[in-house]
Image 1 (cartoon, rainbow, N blue to C red):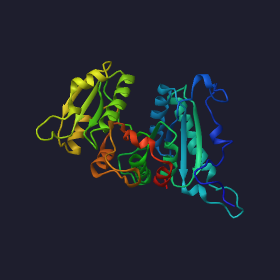
Image 2 (cartoon, rainbow, N blue to C red):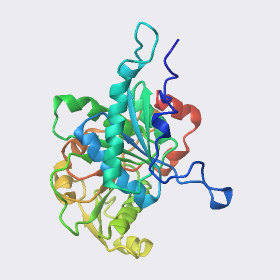
Image 3 (cartoon, rainbow, N blue to C red):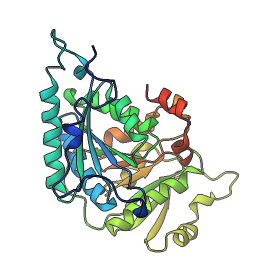
Image 4 (cartoon, rainbow, N blue to C red):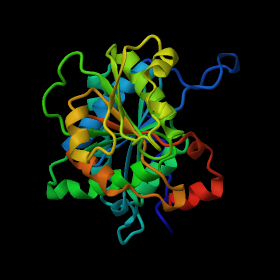
Length: 315
């Protein structure tokens, strides 16, 4: 007999039932409308994952959304000779317990739950992303051997998630006060820029900082790109101070210099369908070297992927 159905929590009455003190059982009444979708944060026991938990907890409070702390691993599918659950289950629960404590310390009002899932971490996170509004993952950006596995998970999830994914690097000091949120335009299709700029504008508004648009698309036939129209963006987001820097054909290192440090860097994961998407070399380089949190915002059409495509993408 298998320990649990792959992709489901090992102990729904235990881990998934944990909530912050004061939270009432049951959801809101129908008159109040549907509850906000959850923010999902993946943890693996590393320090960089705890940094992601703290960032996600503060963002969950800002959005008045529940926080789902998810630990998934292949080792949890192993049973002992008696057929009992994996002997590693206590270790997994300890990982989520530490993460829960970190979330509560970072944001007292957070409504957090924990979940332990057997199986491939990327597949579990992609399934969770289908019902969430945001996925948050940590990245060491150091290449440490014990963190390289989780880095590959972050790459897979960032490339295929139907929800925006925020990669939080290892903390390297505070971001200077007043630095702008950065939206990188010109990656992927021109239609993707609106989703990127909109996500970045919301973050800038919440942080009460300016928004910097970096236009990387080269003009076609000598005509300026419509996305580089600063007046247009100022009209669309009048409550945020907006500036524009044009960097046509910029290299990853030039982008890095222009956008960091920042409270958040926002860009598209690039072109491609869900079933065949992978991050290209420049994206991987930026994720490896960027010292600011980086959000990859998928095109709006990816949130409406048919169920059979979504299932195939998540494995």
